[in-house]
Length: 168
Image 1: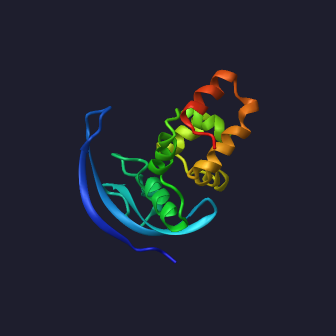
Image 2: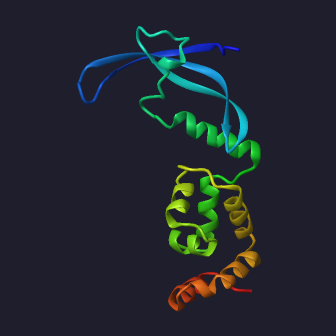
Image 3: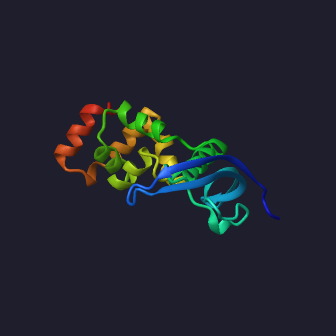
């Protein structure tokens, strides 16, 4: 089954490296994609260079002004459909405890870079990470998690964190 594209608009840009003009037709296309092994229906946007066939997926380019546009839309829809916390919600949990990225990552047992990518919306958290974030929303559960991680923290790390997190 071939999906029907819809023409959205035409765009003229000047290529930054060459200074040459380029012309594109922007199309939208309904597609079914897999995100974390789950199917979602999405409308994606593609740019097709002038003169190329609009019905040939080989000619579809991600939006040049925002190459992650479709991926970010997929992530938003996945979060919505499956009740996954947004990057802002994850950041708000961490900030509610006044913890740095490194401190929060240490307590959760995930890498600092992974937490940073999640908070910046660059990757989706795994189901396990989502469970940790949800657990962290409960102050008593989070305090117990901090206590359980005491053995892997330096004394100064543990003291800094416990000053911010009321252990109950």
